[in-house]
Length: 333
Image (cartoon, rainbow, N blue to C red; front, side, top):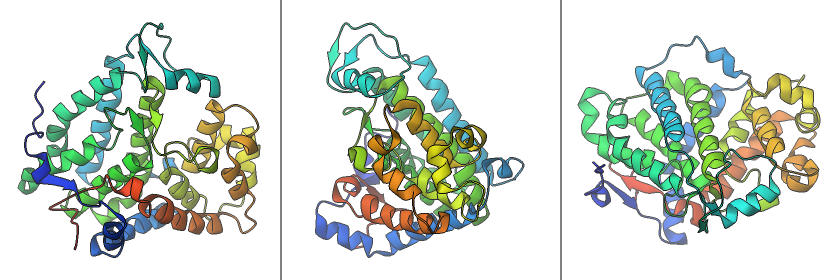
């Protein structure tokens, strides 16, 4: 299927950060300041809120439309099963983790994840412009090709077949751009986290387990998670004043995970880790264990994760060098 937006993609949005100096310029720019304000406003919007609290909330039409887009991308995974191959990474993945979704036979070696992810991503690219167009106000439809590039880059690299916090950051930029062009309003911030981002997280996890995606730039045991960050940040905001669900209980109590993982992103993140990683929690996730011991509780954890996200994701050249800049998300020199 032909790619509608590939011929002039370099003209629509391109990478601008090629070294540490470019990164410093970006971090001091109005573009980054506005993006960071968006992160913080979303953080404020979900403080002391459960996922179900937004169940009956009405937002902009684009909120529900984007959830439908993500749901369709999830269904697309079901239509493109893993190829009959095994990756060297998948072998090590299976030895380190307790479960995987594919039982495909071994008949073709590959270095990275399953080759069907590339097929899935090709389908995404072929549909992304029309998907984005369904979100935009009529007078902004000309921006669909540019914004489609951010959607394409939000789910992993089609050649390396990996996924990490940089791809998650690209999805954040997409949400920010949609806000800037009027598809979303400030009143949607809570829904963007608890309805849209939760659906996005569901899709990316499905991609990781179905196609064995390699963690991109993982810090191993010294990172929060192999793949994501924002669920911890915004999830800690959800628990901000919660005295019942304490930080230690999230990592130690199976009952807390059972009762609250559907309501709180942070609890869900810990449950997801415990489902797949073997061994004592303090061995495979020492940083999360240390965070659980912060005596000041969730407010201190939330403020610390905000600083950490800026430093360890947006402040790292290997992550941010892949960021795309165009007419909406501008690189201010």
